[in-house]
Length: 276
Image 1 (cartoon, helix red, strand yellow):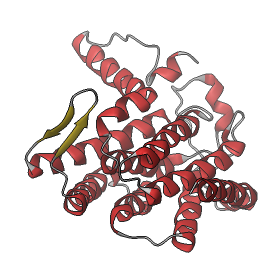
Image 2 (tube, helix red, strand yellow):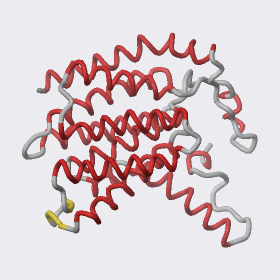
Image 3 (cartoon, rainbow, N blue to C red):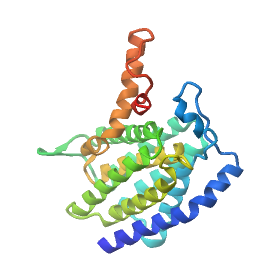
Image 4 (cartoon, rainbow, N blue to C red):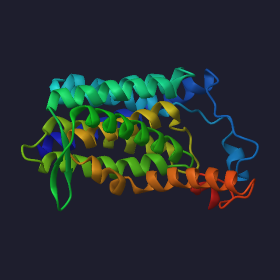
């Protein structure tokens, strides 16, 4: 199994590295450049026109390779569907947040039905059981929160992609160490890790391409779905601590701004802009 994971990771990495240059040229030709806010950091103005939607290539490579190399079945359908559907929504639909909630609800229901999940594995405590309907609601909220957390983090060269690599490595190991092991989930994580490393080749400063909503929303949703399937959703905030901090900085900034009638804690949120 370890050899298959390494082969999948290297193959997805190689494909993204090979396909990304012509993909970038295609996006430039189509005029798919990033629009920079005037109130943003001055260092971001050089990114004006940098091709976005880089996440679509990552998604495409992962989906095609998984379908060709493995048999999509039962437990892996939900993360594959989240990756595909949320990726399309992020790229093309103006009402993406509404549809994200719908996709999250469907994915949460499918996970609960497939695995008959009725609770969570709490570290150092054990399994805690709740009503199945409450589980579906919690799972849907977790998927939406994770998706938006990654999306908020995607504002600095290499930040979202690099953080996602570490998160998917963690869940690949969790899937392998679970009893029973979940090889399909681990293999999907390996493909995503390889594709993200290939993407980072072109996304580190100065970025030649940006992940965009298509990648950040879909990969964030997929991360939460995998966390649910592996039974470690409560560990996700620790593994994805950067996403939690980024999202929290936005919430704190907005609340403080409203309560103090215009004052700010950070120069700009999310917090990575504050340090720029």
